[in-house]
Length: 466
Image (tube, rainbow, N blue to C red; front, side, top):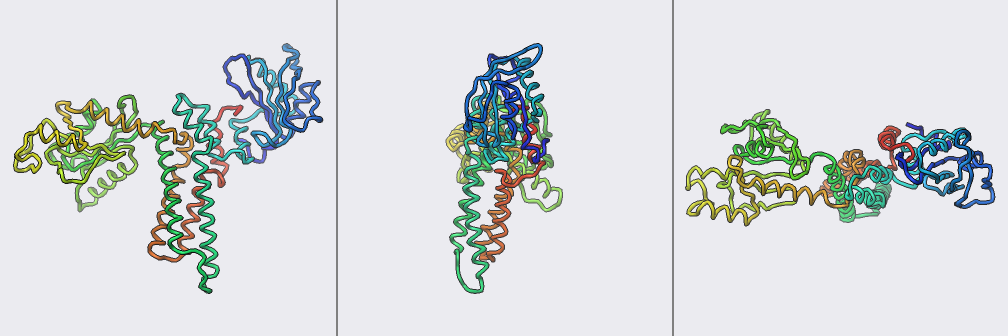
């Protein structure tokens, strides 16, 4: 990783695609970029052009290429992309020609650029924040229109702009809080609890939206977790095996067979997914069972989608459960009849087909892992849910998702803690402490706070010349 202290040095690299093309670009940036060009091109006289200017120049590349005519775009001041004097040389796109231009620049005083060094300089100069720098990488790495749109949207500020605005409002809120603390003995009220609560709620909403975008993008590049939840013997393990196409989980009539979270990666309508079978939902009184329930709850909390599994004859039509964006209601064991009519308030006096019709009306998908009933419909609904989640352009690029998830989580937790404190009429100094923690976490996302390790992780993913 190039040290921050090296950012004034003049660097050079091929900035266009390494593949052969009609035209190619060599980029030079640094305090002596213009002087380097003047050494490369005897006919270049920059001193009378203080503004960004286009020049036709002739480079002397030495043997065997000799002289080369090209176009030089010169930014002689710091008003460039990288925040330092910069030059772009546009010429033939043949790789040997571009490499010869780079070699000439090195002989004239530049050094080879490291991965992502141009974009890192733009970040350090304040031209981009860290999420926008990562969006540059997202544009480069995009393999479809959805990924490109997401990266361009982030480059335009869809992630960082709301966070910067929220951070400014939280700073103003913190200033009012601390002013009140300074004059607490004089009974001067700078801000009331209702205003503090409203400010924290607004900030929490923005953080929640940022978390949604980051999570959506992360799922677009990794297998989306789909967790199966329900009571013991609800048919979760059998359904997982049916969706996986092979026996992955143990199936038994004995309740509580599944203790650990059982996972299997597969694809549903082209979407990579990870199916998670979990312990049945029940009240427990021993430590092992409590750990099983905790693992199941955590899997559901972080999953992209929950399949809520209930044997079809046990479904209560008066239950307020309704389909939700992150949940599919699954009526299982369609191959089985109720143990007895009397055990089923829903089925009493009604045919199985009539009950199923009512269940479908209420949003349930009827399935049987044994007979395959409804599995195609369930997979279609899963694909629709995932496509809806991942189809929005309001997402962050994958590098941002990986880097920022923990910071966003900590910001949300601090804001939630601040809200609890203000609602409990706790001291303002405690609320101010939580706001400071949230501000630090937000600043880590946009890059107001960073370390060399963070810059290394971000910019080492770039190719040389970007």
